[in-house]
Length: 496
Image (tube, rainbow, N blue to C red; front, side):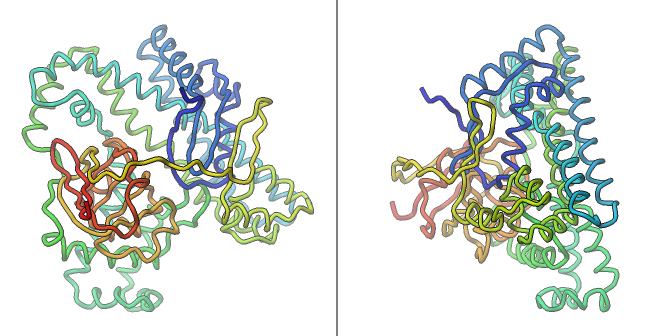
């Protein structure tokens, strides 16, 4: 049995990974955050894979289950309140730092960065602990609805997913919906349609179409931060938004020809879900409300990191300038390297960051609780069978045939062609420029509340999630067909 278990595969930066592991492995911080005594023993990031010690994950789930057994539903209420307080403290710290005038000296920058890193560190336990907490809620709710689900055509997993959707739309949904409304208006205005096609026109929009330009500015202000997670990117700009808008207009014009889609649960399914909810006893109804709150909390706790990173972009710019490195290289340093560099270290940080960005890196929690960032280990070959069919879960119904484009990093989104099939371990808001051009989406991971599932339903893109190994089995450029049916999602190779 493996000593580690994979949590997620995605592009990261050393700054983000080290801050995360610091928060995960700080026993005092973890206890303050979760009110459980937990010490992380094994954790590593290798080859884009976050991996936790299997015994650690089992132990964390066990102590949280014990907490629930002793305190009941009050523990979930306390956890949610503490999580929101900690996240608010991080955002407020970033907001206050953003209002400060430019630092006059390096030590001022160092003080500000240390304050931000400390606030980030305190939020990190919630990124890890919410999964066993939410898993326990799903287990308890599943037991409560099981007798009622047997009277329907639904599976337990489907019923749970439909019942416990977030109480409010996520930021990803609101961003998509807002852009769709703008795109619809553009389609009705020939002059605007022509204006957004020319990439050189964006600077003239403010003069020629001031109201439209103001609308774009407001959208960027409200949702531009969605690109800033892990400090890799700046918030998206009006020029970025115009690129997305052109693809939205294209999609609206072509949707009837692209695929037949049902992006919402069938009416019969929803009627059965409402029947289950109406029959819940007081305990079940209480668990359901908690599950819905936690679905919302799961997004909120990550969104705060996006928003706070967007707030301190100017501070990061200033830091990069003082260290004489590019903004895009800064997150490839650790917090300690940045702070020592600001204080006068003579290390060649630019070269170090460049190597990590181009060659990759590993991060490991060591036995003495220190964190080592090293050159990437030789990746173990992934043994996969060249099978002609993959199965997963349908996140958005429909079908589409096209060429595979493997997207693992934001750089892979460049020159993504309209109608290509996006295949990825998991999607993030950084991939939107490719997603809005995609004919279909296929992912290795994900549940009904993952980013790919949410955004595919918003855009009416056939989507199959949870295939396990699609990004490792499929090859870039090959033709595949994606069929997302109500009972399952199927991916077939056309050359098999």
